[in-house]
Image (tube, rainbow, N blue to C red; front, side):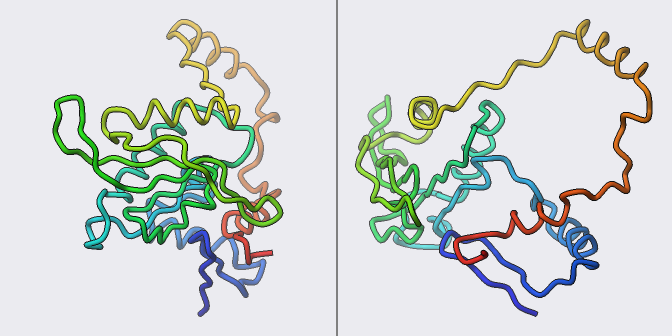
Length: 212
C-alpha cells in the first residue's frame, strides 16, 4: 500500500516479503506491458518532465523524444556504466537537467529549411551524490529531428565510452551457430526454476537515491 518516488523519478515499492517478489513482478508485467525488469542503459537513466502535451510551458515533446532516442541509442550502443539523460521542456527544468550526465532543455531553432523546429540546448557533466556537479553548456539550439542523435552519439562515445554493438551475423553464420547450439548438452541450459539473483535484480530496478 506504499510507493515512494525518488528525485530521479524512480519508484520504490517497500515491504514486499521475499516470498511474494516473483508474484509482484509478474503482476507488474501483466498490468504494465512497457515495464521492464532490467531496462537498457539509456532507458534506465532517462528522466523527463511532463512534456508539451500536458504543460503549456514546455516547448518540446520531451516524453516522446526521450523514449525514441533511448530506444535508438540502446539498440546501437553498449555502455560500461550507467548514463543519465535528463530532458526538460522549458527553463523551469522540472527534470533537473543541471544534474544529469547529459541535460537537454527544450527550445526552438531553425532547421535546414529555415523553419522553426523543436530543438534543445545540450548540457554535459552534471552529477549527484558523491559525484555531485552542475552540468555546463555543450551546444545551443540543436534541432531534434535533424541533429540531436548525432550530437548524442558523439558525447556518449567521447565522454562515456559507448561502443557500437556488433552487427547481426549472416544467415550462414547464424545457421552454423544454431546447429552448434543444438548439439550442446541440455545440462548446460539453466533450469527455469533457477532464481539466482532474481530478488537482487528487482531491488536494483527500484533502487534510487533514497532506496538504499
